[in-house]
Image (cartoon, rainbow, N blue to C red; front, side):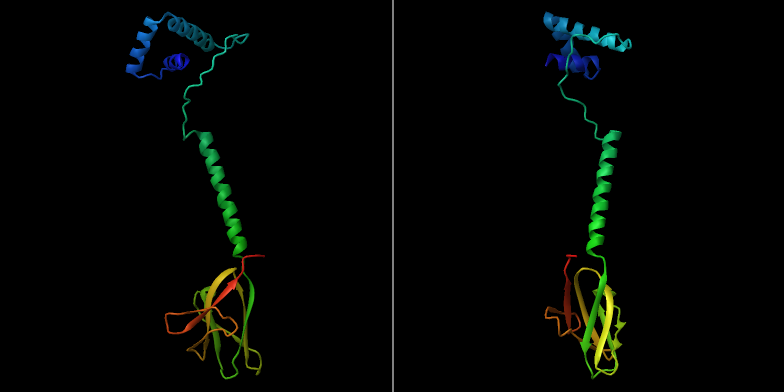
Length: 186
């Protein structure tokens, strides 16, 4: 403990009350005074410049080290770590949401117009293609992995849930949306 106080004194890290306590201790204890003078002599030699040999007395100051959170090395390390995390997260999200083609098909020979709308089109209507006169309508869209809501619009106004997808929910317009889940595995 005395090494710590001496170190604080040498480095001028004591406040006035601590300095008063230090001076009183130096005058009151001979061993403390001798130890302080020894450390001050070592400090004096260190400040004079390079020496030919290292002193045989090596002291350690295990006391509290000053931790500066804004030290340039700490800031650079933290910034690098944040950048790595952001890049990794961006890569993983991009990999999971990479769109892939998905084909939608319905059989409605009774209609002359079919469209699809959903979360993957930002609820904009996209016309479907009639497959000749077979009654089938189809479209292929690039859709990211995940869960999507959609519905077909027939004849420009009739909402029609996909009969091949059983998972559905009521929408805000009195109809049903089909819920398409494209799994996240590649």
